[in-house]
Image (cartoon, rainbow, N blue to C red; front, top):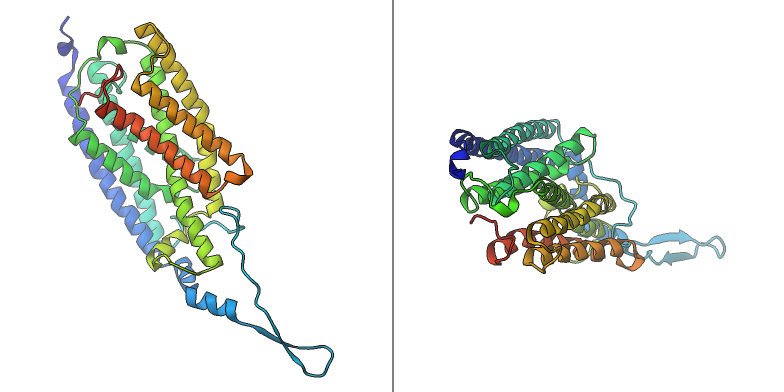
Length: 364
């Protein structure tokens, strides 16, 4: 049988058109998100944050209170100002910012438009992934191009599900859409592979199980990484408000940071995402080992992809252990989480592109 003849070229072409269309709509969503944050930063929230400057805070801290002694007839006593001690990272009792939905009414309208465009882009994106699958009648993740397009689709789906559950995640919209645009741009320009049938080793039902779990895990871990990165910025912002000394953020950045959730909320969100997905990533590795035994006759062979999958697992295990240990909460644990996600990214891009092994199905 001629495998090339089994490809439906029309559906493959429609898939490409839908992916490019999705990129165009994501671009409009990106611009709408930018407008949302710009108009929102002109809100009372932004002005309130702007009012707290290093100069005014320092003046308040340097001020002294003059009181009259109860006894001794009019003796003035100067009280030493209280010393402000910085709280532990992520432990301050600070309310959440209003999120991207907060701000002026005009800013919120742009936000609603951004979400609507993101939904439309997602539907078009999903259509591109589906028609790619139908063109060859298999799972649409047999190479890096297909994995990347599906990864972006699942990341957006995760975001939209959280929105549907009334979670305060509008603040993820801008970094998410930006990342998906970069992901699709890399996919269509560098990683693109014509629609074709799989190599014999991938003809297994484990393709649906193992790779789908890897995609869902990666998309969810991405959400945790974004939250962790924003946590580091927000934590420093809160520290400056608490004890405003040293280098300061620019006012535009401070206005944005004033509107995202508190450092404690971001830290908690990232931890919950990573802790929830960690068992799925564990199962992904186990499923891969079972598939390897069926395809190559061994469960583990220290292939580069297997090694880096395990390194990623160890890195996230260290992060979860650190979060459960009093001395490693906050910024130290956040750095571990970002290192762990960097391992995941290298496991996908670095290993697939630069290292040759049994998992070299990149198609680039």
